[in-house]
Length: 182
Image (cartoon, rainbow, N blue to C red; front, side, top):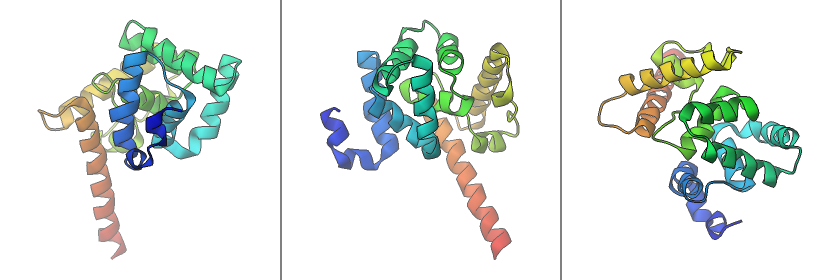
């Protein structure tokens, strides 16, 4: 573990830690340790940590620490966004929501998080994650990313457009609850 993983007040705001420390660390050194990778997994879906860890170990044939380094080195060495997407989705067997979350933390100007909230706001794209043809899944993801970029206000970074749509979804959910419940 590094010093900043033990600096707990930095960890309170998990997203800030991921995008301010973990992502830059990946871009600088070209790989992540298991703690940092599992922090991304927990941020996206805490319930998936054990499943993802087991899958990484099974896919790599090694321990979790080595698997995390191998996966993130593969991402770093990939020459295009499409290749990065294929590495995470095909070689390492991540489902689209988790694959997009990992890639978004590592490369926030290139990827956006695919999730049900965004699909609901954008009015579609729910079938992309079930596409078995990897090329078609990639094409669907690019369409989803373009829709995110068009939907959110101009002048925002791709990451802030993602946040905007997520917050809008949370807002709509609360308003719906308040309208129906009371």
